Length: 457
Image 1 (cartoon, helix red, strand yellow):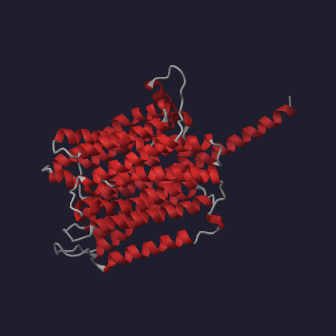
Image 2 (cartoon, rainbow, N blue to C red; image 1 turned 60 degrees about the horizontal axis):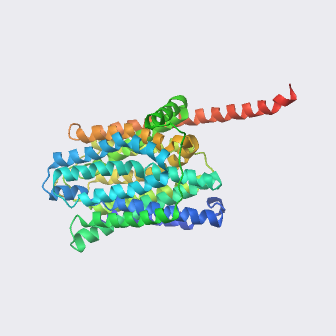
Image 3 (tube, rainbow, N blue to C red; image 1 turned 135 degrees about the vertical axis):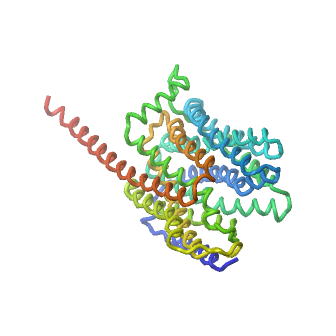
């Protein structure tokens, strides 16, 4: 393997280690023993849940191909997963708010375990059912757990600022270190030990079962709006009204959809971007490098949040940098001569793109704890899970459209579109900051007026 990959990985490792070991008093927040126990419990559960998710990623496409399905069949399976998340996401989100977030988290474990079991069957219909179950589970993973955490954190009376500590640590481990370890462990089970491509899915089910046991034994239940007579349609109306009546929530949803839509599109495009002429690239090692970059981003985010930097301010820069990094494939295709040798090592243009993609993944690492922080501030508690899954409707629709037309457009057009979306996210983030500042000024003015009223009867 070319030394370039080792240099990038080694450099990122040194920077992450330096950031983590070099944290000063300004980068650390004084908390309580009770909060630390609560945080560690959630981070452990979240890491187990993400293990169950990350273990499946490296081999899902390969497993389907081993069962004899072609690219079109596999594409339809992926569309079924995202379509399921889009269609059923709001329903399970509303049920989580009404029936309990702890119960929803347990449902995630059960649903994803069943999805893993379906991978043992070579029947297309069974695999399709597994993708549908996986789509439902994904909706719960990205709404129920966060909703439970925010509600439980507030219920226990912890400092709202401490939420960012839990978010940053969960992303650092669950979306960074765990992803790297899961990829290596999946490779060990499937290839080195010879258990085959189904083995990572069985391991994922085991980790999910362990996490479910911890949830059942140590988590308390919390809810959204439990008003009598409120059915699912009423919950939808409450969520839709909150989005329509509060510009901050609408902007946050648009920003999230634009960024995550670009992020998921990047997942499908980075391999052909780095190897347009079938260059020999180490996919697993590059994936680990991306996850290390994400860890770097979450480490940076934890410092920014600990120093009480304005999230709405620095995220404008993050989105702008992201837009630039995903424009690199367009720029290199125009400015850097393409390699004409098939099967060779990564080209100079590919090397530049890899550095840009690592920067993008660092932005992803900053994005997750930061968007979680903003959601905890702006989304009302009574319909939190429902609103969060409303946000995922345009995201999943966008990904389905991209998957369906992935061969219809040149890869540079797809990256250019993502770059435009990220630039739009930066503009909307600027607008969100302005609206939020105006709201704070208005609230403060009303409070001052209310204090003066008794003096002026």
